[in-house]
Length: 448
Image (cartoon, rainbow, N blue to C red; front, side):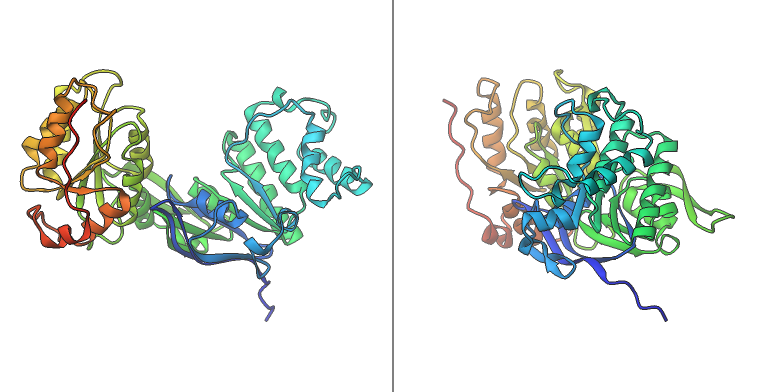
């Protein structure tokens, strides 16, 4: 039996947090030489965070990632650049350098300081330009290329780096179907022929199934599946992780599975619902974004409202699959949106009020909480009122009335500790367990 190739990248029990918000939780995986591993999962599932941790751009709060058995933090920057090549999701436009010079940047990891480019460096760059169809266009500026061409050129620069491990974050973005297939076919061939390890974050599961040896699925920062495409892909996976109903088919020629999505489902349900509450969050302007991430990561069933369309909190909710009551920007809340928000309030076991800016357009949300959320667990993330009441004192009055009914918490970590002691059904706010875990309620300051 042929022995398995060595592990080029090993992640062991990796947890990454941005302040109190978990982005990855106890993720372990191995990627071997010559293996193409696809990282899949919805927006916000932790794919980019894993890649950034592998590069050493973020430091895990727990666990380690090693390259060739050496923990990433122990590698010098030069050694790291020779071991890992990275293609990020987006890249600033930068100067309008020539295509030839841009691909040549990939050789810097192998160059000595103040030493001119060598013959080998030129040969590698020129061969890659020919392979990617840029021969004869070497002097063209990168800003003169289309979005798809720039994406292909970025991969060409990554390959010029000649590193044994390639980390690709959404490499097929901005490419039409033909170029997507061409790019992934190239990457698959390089892994096979050169023994390089490829870890690529991919949104398209069917592309992942066609080209990857393994698919690792992340959901809310946790690994929920890891294996060959035929073993991993299923209608149940797509329903539970992406909230989409799909049919599973198999390609008669290759035997590979592929999914045909049919309908989105109304709510993406966490695999473990036993410990989660239904939590309605009231926010706006990005005040609720870290709270949403933290609640979802802990398995709570979260809703949001009412917020404006395109608001930062609305966008975060969309990425996480959170039901949201939304209104058009810069208009007062309409009756239909308020009715939807009141429905979400009524369905919730607990209500969390983020420190959002209170104005004439959204002060009605506070009225709805006071009227509808009677008897529910109320949590006020209290940073004070100064600077965020734009209603001439009406907002402060409502917040003070809400504070009289609420448990005061200071941040996402405080909130999670309070909710951890809650049962699956609403309880009185005088619950001793809650009061023992959060800071005592303090009076909101009077408007100045």
